[in-house]
Length: 461
Image (cartoon, rainbow, N blue to C red):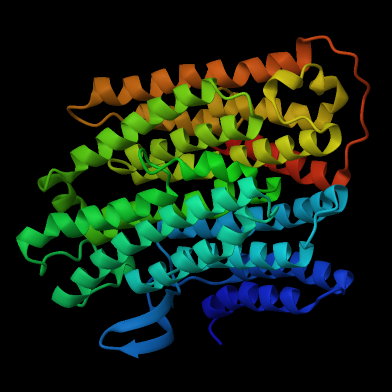
């Protein structure tokens, strides 16, 4: 079996084994930890070639196949590493979280969690649009019940909203894929720089709009964003999964692939559709940043922050893939730590609102120190890699858009400080009758390692 197919299959097999483990929790937990370790090992040791080769998992005929590539492009390789590395840390954190919170139906939860990240792995190395779509929708089917996991009225309502949005996006993506397949038959985007040459000119803009709108749902671009804050009703490992490892990063990845490999930059700019992408992503950055300021719920404030930063990547990705992928990496590292820290705060103190966290720093010094450092990075300050990625975003100024482009990122950075620094100040400096709590190593150690890694990456850049 090819190594790339094995990499994708490992997670899916592990998910099935976890689901079948029933009450054998030791066996289940071993599989849950072993799967990401094996995938990461396969990813690190795999020798990628200089040529892109399509490896078919299933051939449906008429040019349609489920296939992966043996040498992913730059964006795909980064997404693959982000998913496989953070999956391992998220796995250790999740097991500790389940134990500390006595999470019900934990076997189902772990099986779906594994399936979700495995789908993200599949997305990252998909060879064609159909494969991307299949893994994309497997990701939806895995994360939808995770959002509804608590099974109360609020969780079920949020999960239904998530499903409505994502299935609507899937319908649009399928429309675009069908048009491309009908007229060109070329869907192998990993080594294409545009697939719409054979599509009639009157259908080109419809195809571009369908693919970009469909991808924008998971990327939470305004006005297709409202499912994401509501999905914060899910357990914290799911929130971290949604924001850093799988769902929204898959949406951004799909947008970048559509722009650069499906549409192609020449047609993207000639058609004028880039203006709409810039407008909606730019508006999303400012809108979501402002909305974050008004949220008292910690996870919801972080969710609106994610919405803004996803559009950072989309906005920059129209011009510079390098700047986009660097912030893709930086945001994944920063946001997974922030959500994990929010989970520790909720688990150890029961506090969910920012107005309640006075003195939380001295109570949970390790966790809140990591939260503080990553908050600074998200604002664009050292010592975290977010400082470097935001500097790169500002450093790349496209011709004719310099003032607008720079203003959006500078203003958003200032608003980021307005919604993150009050949390840090309140946690460290507002007096409260508190005592230090013993922090769970299973939840804290992954947070500290990722934080340290984000600081080291700053030095390497």
